[in-house]
Length: 84
Image 1: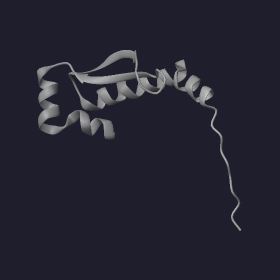
Image 2: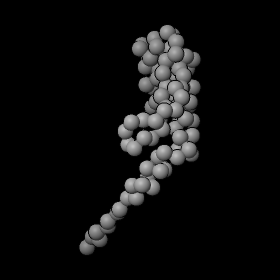
Image 3: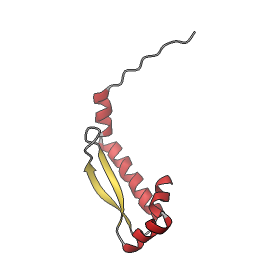
């Protein structure tokens, strides 16, 4: 006979965790690794508070040069870098 399990999430605790400095640091490291894998001309935007999920911190990688934009358009350099 299967046992029924009930899980209750501590939403306030999860929100605090997602907004914490250690999580923001891990997100920054991940964004920097993606930019490095993508190649020259890809940069990380500074942290900003995202408007969904209770104000989590997020980073973005963007093309800073024409060559990087072309690499993304033709070879999907950034898209491939995200997949790691």
